[in-house]
Image 1 (tube, rainbow, N blue to C red):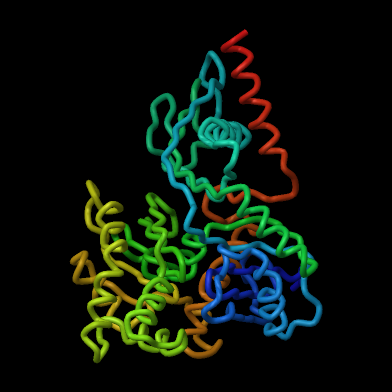
Image 2: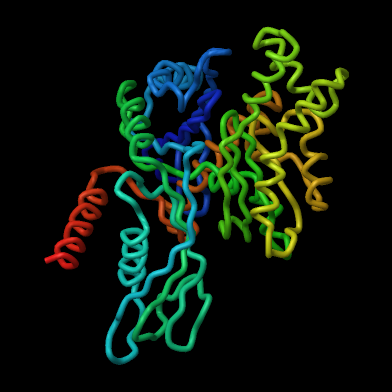
Amino acid sequence: MIKRRPLLAIDLGATKIACVVAQRYGPVHGGDILGVGVAAFPLGLPAWPGEPSRIGPVLEQALQDSRITLLPERASVVLNHPDLGHQEVTAHIQLADEPVLVKRRDVERLQAQAVSHALSLDRDVLWLQPLGYAGNGFDGVLDPCGLAATRLHGRFHLVTVPVSVRQAVVQACESVGLEVERLLYGLQASAVACLERGARSADGPQMLIDLGGRSTELGLFEGSRLTAAVTIPWGFQALVQEIAAACRLTHEQALAMCLEGLAAFKPEVRELAERHLQPVRDGMSQLLSGRPLPDAAIVTGRGALVDGVVEWVEAATQVRAALGRSSRAGRLGDLARQVALTPAIGAMEWLWAAHAGQAASAVSPELSSSAGFVDRVLGRAKSLLTEYF
């Protein structure tokens, strides 16, 4: 069995940074985890994304915690952020006057057109999930390659990130000697890890809820394929701060009381937890509006460890809910550490599949250059010149 260079996946959270270093083997064997690391941002201090300069030192601590002396020079970074954008976009391209076989380069050209038409100059693509392709005699196909058509239509779910956030991530990684190879959408990475067994055996879609420190991601998945998603600029740190202020506690005391959550002894803490979960309730209603109920709801992220939250999701949606974490994390520490490492493990599994050519047909852009931004600027300039001159 031939060993290849190790891979590094970093989960850039709002309250902690987790990393996974793994060795990739062949397409059948996947790979092995060599080391993991977790480091938290200082308690009570403004954390990423409020203070991007704090990323570098905490990232260095996480890498040291992995106990890997010879680290890869490039990393894939998992990202959630309160300012992520979501939109459904469509595009079409002409292939020929007569039906021809759709090729992979045609699909890539269609995806590029969808992104260029929908993306504003101050944002970059984080994830592009095909929802279905259509052509002569076929519709809703997930992989149109090999089918015959004269025109190719595509519908996509586009997740975008502010350019300033991407630049902050790249600079923070460069400060510790790492090159960012690509950004991965955190909810998709968690889905690969948490839904690996459940969703693939289910008959219908599943809902994944990632309760982070400063943002919450909600998504519907069929297997590990994202079909709809919502970002809520709310995380459990808001509840910790509210408890600290209302009960006159230190940040450490408020964090411990926050974990009691909906089962807390003090009624004021239970009331605060219920009130602060209202944005999550609204987000679930938005996500499920006009759609059939999923078969199950998987709750992950640091906020999922708040006592009673999983049961609250089940009561609010009338959908069977469970705590989600990677099965590979079972021997990597306590429950909190397992949940913290789950997105990075999911990213690593996605990378293994991508290298083996088995990853889901979604676009996770590499950050080797700013050509995409330049192309968008030139495209907008061309449109303005055509329209006004």
